[in-house]
Image 1 (spheres, rainbow, N blue to C red):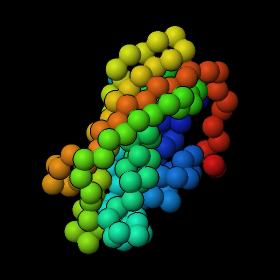
Image 2: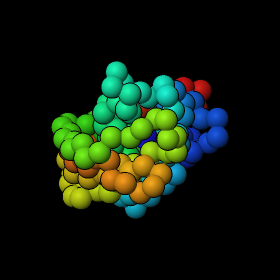
Image 3: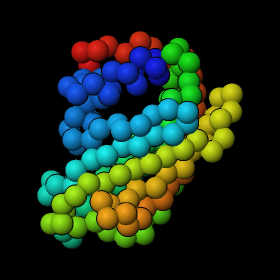
Image 4: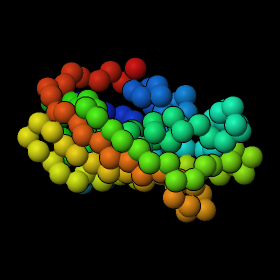
Length: 147
């Protein structure tokens, strides 16, 4: 699943990851246990206090770590997040625009459990959040190009 999926999700009009399409996110890198996801900061990401919602940062961190793990797997394997932690360091202001950049790398790749870490930055390079997660590897299923 992983290699076919990673090829498909990089397509301009990809349909294998509806969340990426909804958020306007794109997978910039996923290889050798590393991944980078870039997403525009828009007003639609705003929470009640006017800043980018923390859940958006958590989603980007989780997705970047998952894609870093997927880059190491055989095509017949898939993953699921077992646990995740996140530390919010700064907020992002949607009025300033720009992009969010989530970068991740695998810390330890085990037989069934893999650990990864991630950082989320804004366009100016300010560190907004750090995260860590554990993923369980299991046999996967084929991914349809049509979503």
